[in-house]
Length: 67
Image (tube, rainbow, N blue to C red; front, side):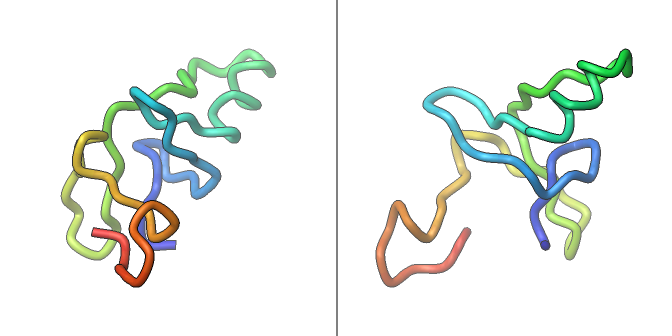
């Protein structure tokens, strides 16, 4: 997957005010120092961060790609 959480996980979802990562939550439950709430994604193709406010999912905008 091209877009990952800041820790490199692909198991994220956009909420109404942040990005939530399931794998970060699991790591935190097992004693790791991970926060499952993020306010930006990493674009692995460009190595740039994308703020939560700019994240658009294909399901949000029919007939468009993730920006």
